[in-house]
Length: 296
View 1 (cartoon, rainbow, N blue to C red):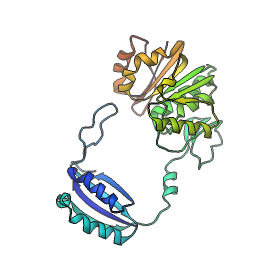
View 2 (cartoon, rainbow, N blue to C red):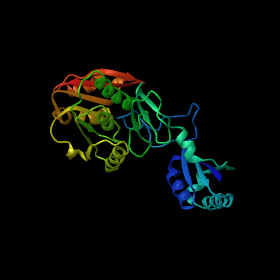
View 3 (cartoon, rainbow, N blue to C red):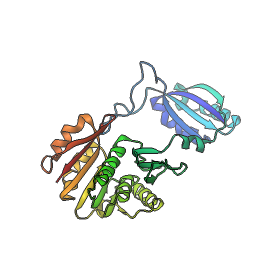
View 4 (cartoon, one colour):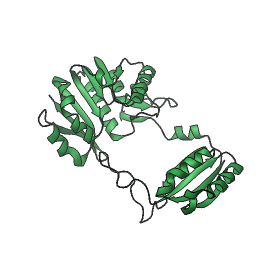
């Protein structure tokens, strides 16, 4: 395979990427050309915040082609396009063939939630110490157990069960991959409802539940009916604030509300948003993120 390396200004990235795909590029990736320099800047803002800019001032565009002739043809055809006048070719290099599936899989290893509770991709054997295992591969839906917010929610569920506290009927609001719902089911929840606004997340959760042999009621948010002894929501601070009255309505008297996707600096604003309904406190923290819980 051969990689065609190009440089272009922000305004040409979309046209260039579309053209490369039309010219049979196997893949097209875009990088900050000023990365690791004083001119580098963040493209994405923090969770819940708008991005500081829509794109980098100068982008490095890398296009992978099956053969050298395809790459050279693409280079020649691009040079004739109006949008290419401010772009430049950085080079054309041969790329060593690799087992991309194996390479990708090597980046995802078993994730420890507690010493006895692990998230394990399908291509790995569970660790010897694992008594409870969720089988989960990376996919389109959020939640593979690698992010601190997911781990903290799962850890809370596992520790509650270890202490002998029944989870009761559980709602996973914004279920993503369904990992929190499955964690609750595997730790003795009486029944688990998992909902998300994204149909892809609903499909992902259904598939993952079948793989893990757990029973879940899965669907869009209208499936969340009634009250629950445990309500889990791992989203982000801004939607969590908007959802405050709805989520609290779903918590049964004496039940637990568990919120994640919150940065340490956002604790006070979440507490303010939920104050009319409950008193949130920080129950766990990891890598700048916090888990907030309340008893209603």
